[in-house]
Amino acid sequence: MIIGSRREVALLVMLGLLIGTAVGLYISWGLWPLEDFTSTPAQVKREYIPDYMVLIAERYMFDGDLPAAQARLSELGVPEPARAVADLAGQYIREGREAGKIRALAQLAYGLGSATSGLAIYINPAGVPTATPSSRSSPTTTSSPTFTPVPALTPTAVLTPPASTPVSPPTSVSSPTPGRLVFWLTERRRICGQGEGPGRIEVFVKDAQGQWVPNVAVELVWADGRETLYTGLKPERGLGYADFRLEDRAQEYAVQLAGGEERVEGLTGDPRAAGCPPGAGYVSWQLTFTGNRR
Image (cartoon, rainbow, N blue to C red; front, side):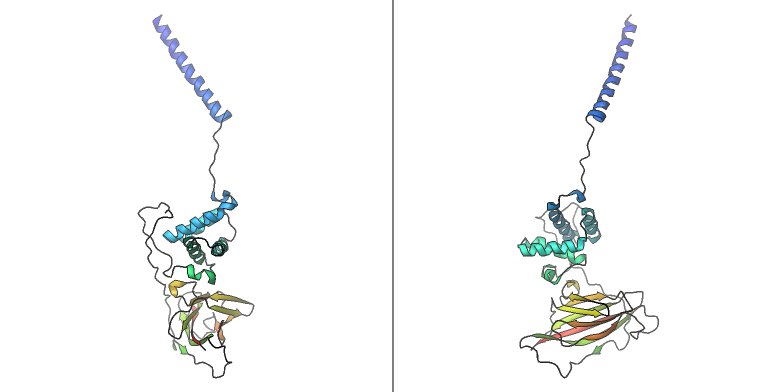
């Protein structure tokens, strides 16, 4: 009799467990299923997108990881993120926002290749900092990372004689306005390099004392187009530096500075047309302009 009662109790306990499990599954899966509240950056409300872009820019200022910043902007779903960052930096300048946020946005816009001359003064002259944080956690706005300048990259090239061609100012020019900074081409250098390239047109602008001159408009013209560059957007190469990639080798380019009295022509991206020796993979041009006040 005792044995039978124990079996009955065991069966009742097992039956109760099964019923409880079934009821619990029905409630959790049927009546109150778990809802996924995980959101993605692309689901951020439009009014919060600028704040998110600022956070991305500040992180880039901290770690200098451009691919990670590009990935975060891509997840945000903003069309033309490079232009959006530059536009937001310009908006913050007009609104008189915090200089640290403007500087971060300007640095990110420069890294994405979409900076303007108005942002040049906000770009760290030492380049994007390289930080060595003890952990990979996101920094707070009160942190003060240590910045290490990024060294300028020097391309490997083969200089062919003549390495440089000094250019003398023309003898007859129009009389400029007194006090106006007038630029003359003082050196034109051709660089024939190995490899596939592409080459570049590199412009260096200095004053009579040899100091860099930033924010100078450089007009680049070719057969079916033109582009305006500004010195100072690549401060790691110098505040008076600007460059242009010669993607189309079939084109011939001309360069003239705002405030310049001459136009430099015959700048081609074709090594053969430029007179480079056989085997040269690309050709670059370095133009040095010197300004004097008249």
